[in-house]
View 1 (cartoon, rainbow, N blue to C red):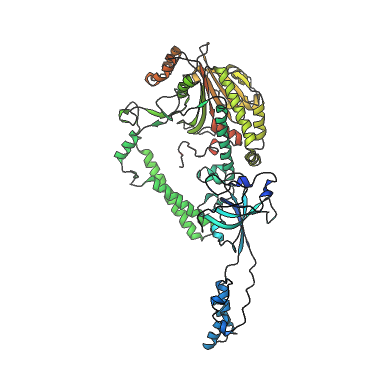
View 2: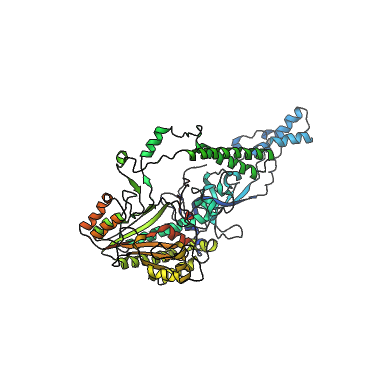
Length: 627
């Protein structure tokens, strides 16, 4: 097969940047524009979503020419017509008959006829392959038709789901009735990426989303996850568009930091000390449990599990399947023994109060950041309005459908701004993103409405156009205390955080639209939030959205040096780590406010899904990180 891509001429379609391939979304566009592409030669590529083979009726064999001694071995110069091997052999039949007679056989006997037929190779009957391929550029797939008589390929090569194909052909009207409005008749195959069918996880029909989480590197090939990825990309672009169009500058803040932006969060510590200790204690890849590497055992379990599944699908004999199941059982028992021994070992941890971090990479304790807003403040105090977009980390072991260890966050900080300004910015941003999805993701949203949630478009439209209620924390508590038709699991009292259950009731049942709650008790918000005049509450807010919960949090930050210094002491934080932050109050302090938008939760809202693990490309949760 040819590996290079030809230059396709006379095509009204623009090829993909840097390649000669045409993205399928430019072919499968809505409306009647597809008919104008009939007869166009293009190069397309994608992965097989479904396929079928239709056998063609074999052609009758060509008639043999009249026997003639002079033509027993015709010279190539007698004519210019091209002939194949079968035709040449058929033309030699009289010659073979003569040889058989000399050897004493009869050309008319069944045995001799069988010998003669065996000398003439029979080509496999030709087939027509119908492939539906998708390249990830849109929801729809393109029908690709391959005639094996013209393009020599086998069914085993191109029919399996997941096969990658790059082909050149001509666009035309569909050859059969169906959903397709245009199809590609292949003239040349440029590349085929075959699939190991017994190991390919998407060979089975419609794996549930929770099963797809075990294959994060393969699941983007499903229609659902591909749509989520395109919606996520659209929201990413929209987030930057919103802030860029409003005079914000994009600032990259560090992922590793010496400070805890909240003062009470669970943080991931970054250190090289533990790695050095492990290297000294045991060779790389070796476990103390009888010298067996746990990772090797895990790999063996996966391999044996695949073998069992393969035997089940192939209807193998019961003895082979029983032996494989028994082997898998023994391997699982070994894994449990190793796990038990590992758990019984004393835990060796790098404790801050027992270890000197002077020998560490940075010479001090450092963490993966929980929030970038403290660093954004330093740029807001010089540039005015700034924002950042990146991953944030929390070492929280709680299992939740709305939070995982690594989540992406859009953060903004505004100089010369107070709490009211931050709440207005949050509301405008949220409405902008809702509207942007409706206006720019029509095809993917149609798929979401059909397969996931029929109400999501109506919900986005309503949230993009309605007004939002703003209530204080105290008012929220009073509303919840008056609820008589619902018993909350957590007892409600002033001064404690509102639970997801409380917030859900306010947004889903009481207001039935987004609601902004502000002026929280100072004990439940970070140390840097500005203290209100009552001395009990701080200038913080949360935007709570139906079906999702809190999507945006924000605050006016403390600009007064004395107040901030007192709050640092109140939280028992190391003053040395926050000296740089106090400097912003020593040198040209300014009132400023900001917000954090949970980007993954915004994607969850737009797709109608319920678990954030299904909208994050590579999820990191407690005890699980596949790759």
